Length: 229
Image 1 (cartoon, rainbow, N blue to C red):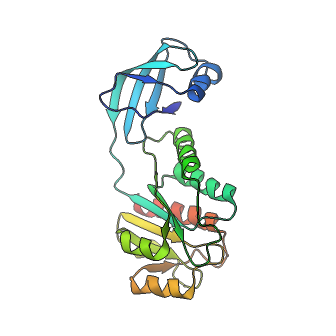
Image 2 (cartoon, one colour):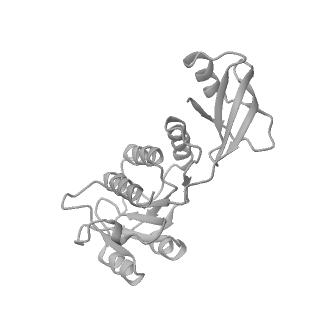
Image 3 (cartoon, rainbow, N blue to C red):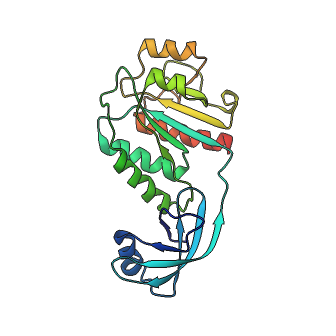
């Protein structure tokens, strides 16, 4: 199934497709008037549509609409922005394909970068959503300071820390809403580790190998998906 994205609602009858997707529909997938294509709004709606007009912007008529419920399992990744933007974007792309629910950039003491391009990350999540045929787009949250995030987030929080001997396993997961916290390349500071302990946050390791932040995030996300889905 070739899946496309549009901000439509349950009350809409037609969708005007953006120029980029229209070009893909007509040139890449060689679709024509009368052909059926599928759209999602990234919030659980799946629309089976018929092409009724073609041009720079294709118009489709919604023929059948179905709504899917999100999985009970919700995995949230809080990760320090990376100095290399392309590596952070790679993480967002792959995390979306695997099925992350939320991503929050967090600023820690050793964070080398303080900002992310939210607009670009939104485009990446939409592209990955279509690639992986999913109907729920992960939420990219605003950047938060590490301490503020610990106070504001209510998920069960698990912190990746190479200094602990706790290997991430099912026994450390006691909720179907889990947030995995990944630090920068320099790791968390001693004060941040102590703050996490004061907040009863579980510390886990991914083994003896020192992983890049984006690798650790994808590795941990994959393990959590296997545990709580």
